[in-house]
Length: 321
Image (cartoon, rainbow, N blue to C red; front, side, top):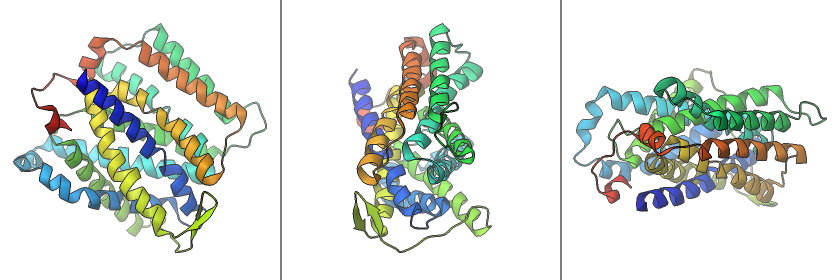
């Protein structure tokens, strides 16, 4: 119970920090930054900030880097859950409001349910199916398919791609097969993601443009490096470490459920920093998406948690944290 409550608190803190990324990054995008440049700086700076504490956490565990499973897990995490997910999200934010982009991304927990069914035989019950139905109905309202709200089709596709990356984050982040401490796992994953993004930029696959113009946050001018530093320190380094700690403590399903608080935080940050607010019908759709994932959480059984997290390890809590 102590580990669960700690994991719950850390998950909410992680959601609050992740929730700042869209609003802070959009202040750069409107000044001419490309999504690729913004996410590359965010991930690279986050990895650099974690390098020293990650090396300290690896004392006596460097042999874990010789295991193929370590590189498979961190590679998937870095390229898909970090670089891919954040790049797709920033591409969506470039064309949609922060709240709508994040509502689309947070269909990821529904994909987690599908993965647990296909890979581990956890067949969804009627309540889970009903929750998925609510989430899909909410998606239709977010897109306002029958109304007059103009939504970018390309932006929607990028948001759905970000949902896949988010699902990978919860599934891989909760899997402790690599044996790496959370801070080392986050640092190595972000380093791999940063290298992938930098290579993509050098090859011209991902456009890299930036500007040194001041940005506008909360109605006031701020130097360009202020949002960059925030993205690297708060929305990357601290957010990813706390997210992995929470996922390992709670399991992917509960962690993804609690992570939905990021949607609420993101709406608040976008309103506070950018003056953005989605249309009422889109807010209703977002609530239905949240309700759908709540239904998935209510259906969770103790054996599901055990199946998600695997056998419990006899390890002191401070080492895990």
